[in-house]
Image (cartoon, helix red, strand yellow):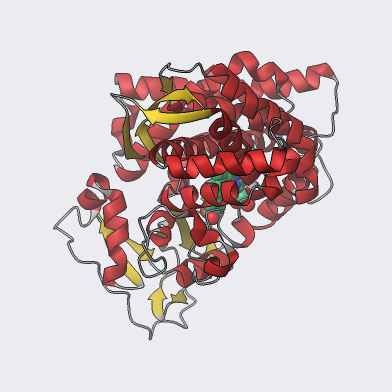
Length: 455
Ligand code: HEM
């Protein structure tokens, strides 16, 4: 990570106290073991130790922020950059030159080149593809069969991103390859984040070999996508054209590595959407009363025709089901930043170069922000109740200059997928299904198996 801008000498905050050390640290490993064993419970309990707390991960001190207001302060302040354990573990995939990992002027320029593809007025153009993919998913499923939700969710998410943003019709035969590789790479990257075993990951062990193969294949796929577009001579009005033709700060063409990293940054969030789809499928199966309400709402809006993109903004309850699912099933469950200068957070001193971590999962399930905090209650998002939710307690797309550019894009596809599936099927978990959360770079149900029953 680029830490050139760290100013170790700036010290206006030395008089401030250090944040308290979270309880439960053990010699040598500190809090590391607890974080590895049960990260969700560990992160959720931290607020009991303070608004800002210190953690010891082996020899390293990491700071954790536990209140909605302070997570926003962190995300909105220019004194923190994208860096820290999460981003370092992702570097092998995302590179250093794409929008998700760059900082400073390069990041601002890259945001400008991708932003037009995600503006609210650009989203309707993706409507027909989202509709087609949502209905194709419902068509693929046969009543009574067992659906492996992991592969199905990956498939639909990657197809929508690739078709909408990269016009990747050619991706059809590559979708499986991409999904398999992404799953292996994200699993390996999470391991590398929480168990920093350095040289052990370079040994020729089967798990390391599988990881390296998957990572190489992902990069190869991206190179193929770029080479094919160039060879075709086509310049459709899409994000890939915008990336290929982007200019740097001096008006010159951007480098090949940056183009590559930018395409990776557009394809890899397919994993985030896929995780959100999995949580949605689980909620529809576990809360048939809400699935029924979704169906009733869709039918009252469409009068029985297939649900379409133009219906999305009228599907209030369906939207609330999606949002409430994202609250409880936070796909992005952990985020990190790094302080670029000595600074203050919540009245405590944060030294330059410190890594700060927070968990949207813990924030979004906190009983201090949400009544019946672990209950599934989509109606809490009705305007008359939503006003009671503390500011920033539910920010699944984050805030500030790193806010997800694809928030509208993602909400539209998740709402359409939910509407299309709930209209056609009742979903039931089957024997062998394991819906316990699986913690990786993203959070998703472990191995969700469902059977669709025709309505
Ligand atoms: C349910 C779906 C999604 C969720 C919950 C989500 C969530 C997030 C969050 C929380 C961040 C901010 C990270 C931080 O603050 O450190 C982020 C950044 C980002 N997301 Fe998403 N995302 C989703 C889907 C997507 C999709 C579909 C795309 C693109 C196709 C995308 C592209 C990006 C990019 C490029 C960034 C980096 C932005 C920057 O650093 O300026 N996301 N996302």
